[in-house]
Image (tube, rainbow, N blue to C red):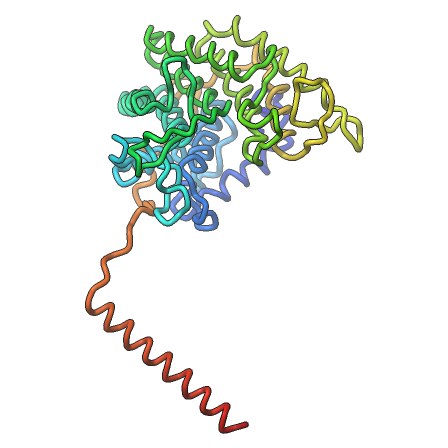
Length: 378
């Protein structure tokens, strides 16, 4: 919806967007609210951080001064993820999927968590003209390639487990992985004033993305769409693909001639299948057939909105920086007071065992007393 406002100028939804963006910041203003701890992933936090970064880059109205600011929120997410406790040495580096050590998936490192971190680092580098963020982005890209999550043909795979030193790579491919790295690479290209290294990477990844995720120039989710085994998250990936590839053409304009015609054809296919009930305008998930497929939901709607609104890119301003129109206030120390969620339980001591024994005895005595009282009363 931030992109929608940016492309159309329609302010109808701005207040509710701001409210949602601020509600999830949490007590430490780092997008790690307690209400999602049980499923809190680096990718989840990263998506909120990238949304805050987008708000700063397109000049989305700043929150009141007593509220967290967009740039500071993006910095808080980046800083917490760059922390040594989060960015650990297993598999030679990289972020884990989940943040709390107790969460299912904490033993998994994946492309999307590290892609969000790479993307955010590249964008902060450009927005603030800060080499430290760029160095992190460089190292993140290099690690993803070195571990085998991105191969020489620019296929990006899902992830692997730390128990195997990340050698058991899950070779599922998802479009949002390609998109998040493409956009980050475009920002690095822009920040480095057209470094040929980043141009080569963008060209390789653009070709791979069109090859793998656009069947006859129509967006297609290869991991799940054929058998319609897509999860709720996967049903929203086409929207990210369209939106981020569109922004890429502004940041790295040399991609426009190749990418924009593909996105236009894909967007037309998206529109063609929006013929579902009850109003004949409801959108489904599969675009390639040209017919409504009865798969409806928020993700399917987000996909089409992202594809259509992105068609307005030629009349919109490119993402700004702090030097050319950005107004959002930052904080380089944002996230310093955040909970790492990575503390493992302390070793059990003799005192702990003694205390547990006493507590157990008290509970048993209470239970026996209660049972005796009930028996006597009967």
